[in-house]
Structures are given as C-alpha cells and as structure tokens.
Length: 158
Image (cartoon, rainbow, N blue to C red; front, side):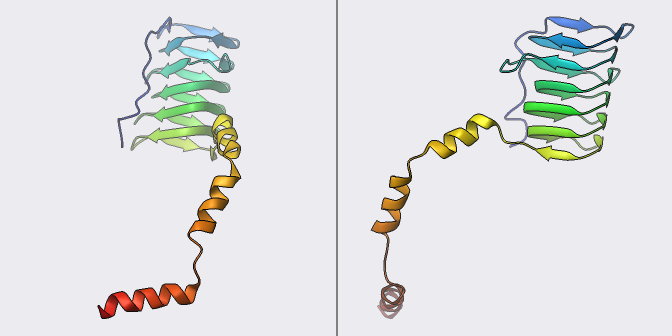
C-alpha cells in the first residue's frame, strides 16, 4: 500500500535555490523544486500534472494550489492538492489542508483542518452508472426471508 503510488515527476523545470527569496505570487507549469523562500501564493494550471516539491529548507508564506505536492519544508497558508499530497517527516503546515489522496510520514505536522475532497470526475463517473443494472441485480436475488432460512436449515441437516 505505502510507496506504490509515489508521485513521479518526469522533469523538474524550475529550481528555486536556497539563497533565493521570491516576493509575490508564483504560477508554474511542470515541476517546481523549492529550496528557498516564497512570500506569496503558489499555483499551477488547473488540469495539469504539475508537481511542487518543497525541500527541508523550503518555505512558503501563502496558499498553495497544485495537483501534486511533496512537502518536507514549511508552509504558512492553506494547501490545496487536487490529486495527491505527500507530507514527509519534516513537513510543517500551518493552515488548512485540502486533499484528494494523502500520504503522511511520522513526524509531519499540520496545524489546521485536514479536509478530504473527492475528485469531481470520480463523482461524475459514479453518478453516470445506469440504475437499471443495479435494479436488475436486486430483482434476480430477491428471495423470501423464510425460504432463505429453510435452505440454511436443510444444509445443516444434510
């Protein structure tokens, strides 16, 4: 179970080094690795497969809204991970965490609410299943409770 669904980033296009401090919002696409500090919101395009990796030295003071995130640093703000969020052992989040899938290591801390949110497309797929099949299955297996008891008694006697 653990480790089978690790976030895989094919390529990190952007690296913000340990000595870099960004003051303002940051919008990215692809992979972003943060060793430095960002004072502002960090977002990626909706529907993308963008990955945010915050190292042990990385810090964000602002909201984070990405599909995939691996956090091992500090975030002061709300985190919205629409696909998967991995919190490593030194992750420290002060704010609410909204996630679809979560992997949290021992030692990670969240000072805020943890809110599970199903992906919208899974909900739409679930509602799109035809009801006729469900109703047919109930009709085929419909037996009187008395008949079930008689069948069970006959099996124990034989």
